[in-house]
Length: 283
Image (cartoon, rainbow, N blue to C red; front, side, top):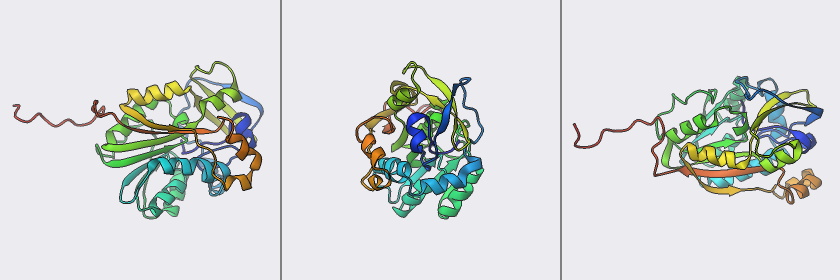
């Protein structure tokens, strides 16, 4: 699993978003429902360099998802940030430039190599988010960035609970995902069905990911112990118009791109799995 998604359906067939890629879209007629699991294969490992090249200044990455997520993170100077599914380090690079301390992880070994090259002062680790973050102590990070990778996770609640555990009580999680309305427009069927899709894109890449309505994402955050502080439907920034004016105009009119959420730990609920100190005065 790697941070940040490529092209899917009609929208992505034109230029494919991804946290770090403006990847080519799928071949016509190559969308299929599959068994209800994405699995643990690091899907972006074999084309990590191509993703980096496309995403560095690409429409969806540099001028759409990246500014939206960085804006929701707010002031980061001096703060310890977990960049979960960090890809080749494009977000981490900007966060380090703003004074943050970065801990990054990705399921793809090649993405981690690229991130280490790009952000030598960061700490990066190969990690599958299907597994616990057992190398991070409770309340050890102040912010978590999880951009365009939610749809690759099979047990999202378990992963979000781990995010809740390692996040400080006054911290925040910022995540982005494909807009579910756009997914429904592209793929049809029942908007409320939660299912896995497999596609072969025009690049030849075969990718697998989850479709889920917005209420499912909200419910999973709630179940994991988060409160949604903000939800935005970002629009591309001004420079994107020079790259593709038609796409820029469409994404200012239609909910077919991404959405982003800032969620905070619910102070009424202790994080699952956190160590609980003994009560004072009790033997």
